Length: 151
Image 1 (tube, rainbow, N blue to C red):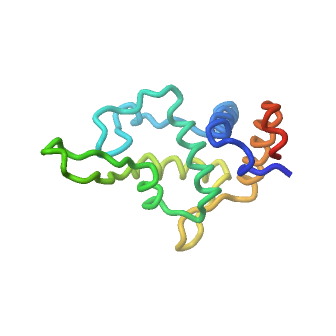
Image 2 (image 1 turned 60 degrees about the horizontal axis):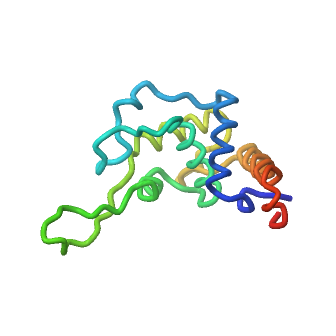
């Protein structure tokens, strides 16, 4: 049986994003065009279909690492930035990703039935979410003949 661990992450995320978009399970919020993805960013995301890709990525991340909370996901989706250009001796600093984007995406995934809240532990993927990810992983592996030998 093929699981989400067998498929390459980038192709799995793209395929999950396509399925989420076709099912209309996820809706992009109105405020997304005005918000940044982290405190170190200057502009909102310019990537096409950013919202469904971020939701797909969050679903995969919660399935692998879950149960996981918004705070640890903020660290995961943050960046290590250089800091100021002052003499270039200052060490790198970690910045956090936007908690509002992560929280809203997880709430939409909960409404779709793919994620549930674990009391005191954060969020985890439901059995429906696991079967959804496994089905998409199977499709990804079948569409790439070179990957079939790993399944």
